[in-house]
Image (tube, rainbow, N blue to C red; front, top):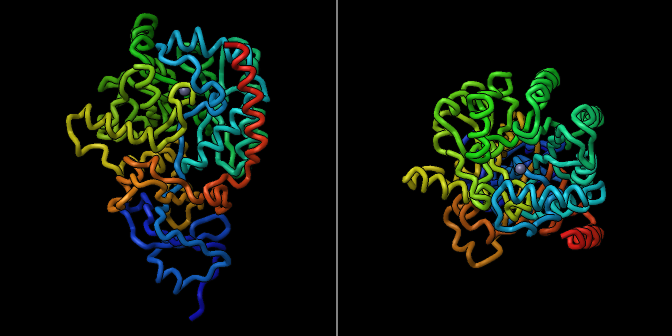
Length: 441
Ligand SMILES: [Zn+2]
């Protein structure tokens, strides 16, 4: 019988496709051609029907869609471990912002992003949404490493190392958007830092451009009770309602944190199709509060998972945040049946893709989608025995390592190592920048 031709067949002990059905498939294989998934089926059937130029087999591997880290500040890996155990406002005002003002430049962002990319690829992440200065540099580093990145370019009223006021942010960000048109890996979104640090007229302007250009709006929102109380004092209502009034609550909105939410605010988010990015480890570490995952999901709001920057987490391991999110949701609901492992894996993959408006191309192992794929393999006794691959990855994720991953069919991790990143150079860049950080502390 004539077999179909494809570029690559990956055999795995388990495939977790996430959609259309979110269940574990034992001894399955995935076929890839021209960067897309073309078939998924039981290994003997796939080998009977398909012939590949390359074939890789992972006898104890779990294949999943590439993970999506839906919120980070990649270059802040260089500030990992500075300013520990401080409340959010003091942490920002006394520690992070002065260091950033003194140190952030293109070399800092390049070195920090190289470090972040090396870390994220090793944790199974193939797509990340970033909000940081010099997004052109972040774009260059992500592209070189083969990672998919959404660059939410920062919008600040004042001057930063990258920009001189709001107009300049727009100019630089939209120029980057133009430069990334047709780029298979990198796209651009608006990244207003927070409603309290950006004026209403700027937010209105962002909304106008975002609607016109079809771009995402990525913003820290309702991170602390203090922030919401300030909105009530200044505007007589919460930021969610203030943003709703100017049309910013839309399917393009990626609202990061959302630790303080009333029922009417959740309904507003649901009715307008906005996504929430839940960053539980950073929220717990800064004692900000808890995003009401179960209530959001029950009301039909898409929730994705982010790590936030490494200065606040301190890791970029999105599976670890998915686990924390599950544990918090169970405790908060007083119900161990909520936030089940398959649901949480779906949040860290398809939920992220949906937040980016990319659910038709990314987030699941389905024929027709882009081949962003990861294979996790047991790497410690804590991974064994393996009865339930969803629970294994979610609750003992650190006991697994990433053996291989692909972005649009291009292998980006091979034998556990990022394949396209010069790690020797990366370590030298990180050492050099860490010296500057030490000198300013
Ligand atoms: Zn953040």
